[in-house]
Every structure is written in C-alpha cells, then in structure tokens.
Amino acid sequence: MATRTLPVSKRGLNFEMFMWAFTRFTVIAMYGLILAGILGALSISARTGANFGDILYWAFFPHLAENPLEQVWMTILAKLMVTAFILVVCGHGVHGLLEILDDYFTSAGARRWSRNFIIAYAIVASLIAIYVIWTR
Amino acid sequence: MSLRRNISLSSGLSYRGGSPYLAYIMHRIGGSALFIFFTLYILSLLGMGFANAIFGNWFVQTLLLVFGLFHVINGLRITILDLFPKWIEHYQMAFNIQWIIYILLAGYALFVVLRNAFGG
Image (cartoon, rainbow over all chains, first blue to last red; front, top):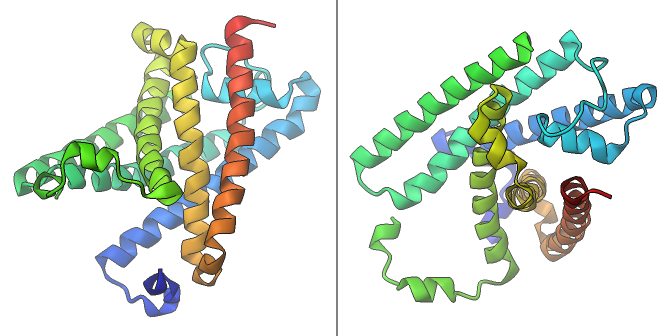
C-alpha cells in the first residue's frame, strides 16, 4: 500500500501512467455523463409521470419496456451525450478487456491477435451504436 | 502469465484474500458482464431476435445487473483512492461504504427486474 501514496505529480509520464490516467479519466467522464443523464431524465419525468425505477429499467432494457419519457428526451444534446458515452465506454472497455486477456494469453502472437480483435470490435460496435442513436 | 503460475486451480480457488480479493475478482467478472451487456444492447437495438430473447430473460438481467453494478461502484472507489492517495488510510471504511451502497442499489435493481418479470 505504501507505494500507492505517491502523489500523481511525482509518478512520471510513461505508457503505463498514460493508460492508468486514461482509464481513470474515462471512468470520471462516464460517471459525469450518467449523472447528467439521470438528472436530465428526472427533470423531464414530471411531464410524463415516469418514476425512477421505470426510467432505469428502460435505460438498461429499452426494447423490453415502454419509453417512460416518450420522445421528449430525444434532443440533439441527449444524442451527443449518448454518443460521447459510447466512445468513452469503448475506450475504457478496450483497455480493461486487454488487461484481462493479457493475463491469460502469454504468447506475443496471441496477445497481438487479441488486441487486434478487441480494437476492431470496439470500432465496429461504436459505429453501429452511433448509427442506431442518430437514425432511430 | 497465468499459464506459468505455480499453484493449482484448487489452491487458487481456495485462496482466502478476503474482501479486497473478492472485489478484484468481481470487478473483472463485472467488466466482462458489461462487455456482454454492451454487445447484447447494440444487437437488440438493431432488432436482432436472439439478442432480444437473451435480454428478455430475467435471470440474465439479474446476472448482468448484479455484476455490472458492482463493477461501476467498485470502479468509483478505485478511482477516488487512486486520485487521492492520502485517503488510502481510510481504505477499510471506503470498502464498507462501497458494500452498503452496492447492496442498496443492487437490491433496488433486483426489485425492479423481478417486478417487471413477474408482475405486481
């Protein structure tokens, strides 16, 4: 534990430090976007009579529940926020998954292929998600 | 790395690392659950029937929410302690607060999922 008490300013800037910072700051961006989304949804929920549980359930499982906010929420700002969220999630997820896979794939070739696959997956998935967000 | 580890699987599974080790393992499982969740989410929004069918199962929803929520809350604790290293001396208190918040949130999420699954 003692080594972790080193202040951020004294940790130096190398690849590990950069990826550590990237992972932490993308997390903070996600929390900020989630909080803004929840507050925005609650602020317009009075108009449609939606409760918190219904909003969360629809947010997680949109095809299983009626949209409790109707179309009031689908503004340009909301679409931009969801797009930003998707990109941040992909960046964070790629790094997290690679960290897990690196623990199980030991050869250089397997690691290279897992990296290529995850990065390609993240690009394709985020493109599909952005298409869905802006066309529906 | 793991392929060169010199402990057996049974020893690994019986390792008693306490709640930090449990959090470490659950964080990884939660991250993987969120990866599956993200994939199913996109496929279901595209109207793929099999993704809707998997997503519609209350047991799958429960697993995704229980592990996904843990990843989110545990990640917040890690981030706070990483960005403010002086607070590490309050590590155990942070852990306790995390578990309380997690149990409350996961309980509420389970209630909503089960209410939607079984009516009422």
